[in-house]
Picture 1 (tube, helix red, strand yellow):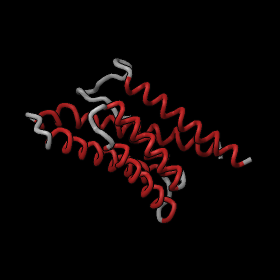
Picture 2 (cartoon, one colour; picture 1 turned 45 degrees about the vertical axis):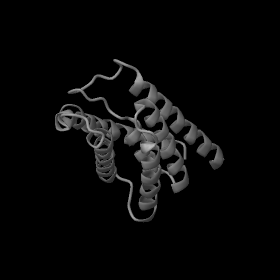
Picture 3 (cartoon, rainbow, N blue to C red; picture 1 turned 120 degrees about the vertical axis):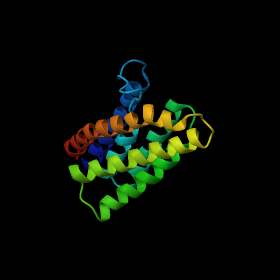
Picture 4 (cartoon, rainbow, N blue to C red; picture 1 turned 180 degrees about the horizontal axis):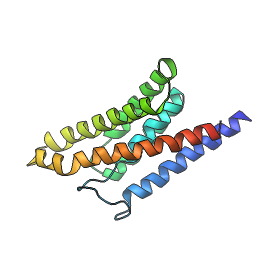
Length: 167
């Protein structure tokens, strides 16, 4: 019986990823706030990692990273690699040392989303020689980070409900 619920829960996460990809990549569906759109799959992968064991968290992190890389089109494997590693270690940390709570989830969603988007900006914008990179960061990436964190808090409650309901 529990195995059936696990399969249904993983299917629900997969369906969520597909819907988030559609929402994120459809032009004009999400409003751009100060020139930035959220990266919805990053906090979705983080919240799944907080709730699941290491191996499923790693696979869902890989899936979210691959989909994000495909949506962006410029970062060949960046999010696939980083989300795989981050989701594995987050799941391990929360299995061994921490309790999944709103404050912990908010802190990790904020830290990881900010870190990944900032590292992406450094590698693919600053180091590639984009002119006025600081102005680009201020006009697009700060709002993207804040928007992603805000969406991540909602995704935490959604994934927590899926995890509890299908357990």
